[in-house]
Length: 81
Image (tube, rainbow, N blue to C red):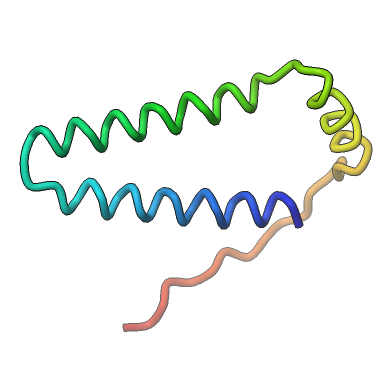
């Protein structure tokens, strides 16, 4: 459930970042969007690499409840036009 929520949030952020990038009108705005994306990427990398006292129990619990084997999934088909 947490992974699904995280992916949903991430997909929404990617969508809005793409919209921001596509609606830029000059080089200054393009640079601003790039800086924002770089900052967001750095924040996510810090979160993933976190070795604080808080992350250890979360990672331990995650490993305990994680599946060892994953079955095949069926990909969604593109929406009909």
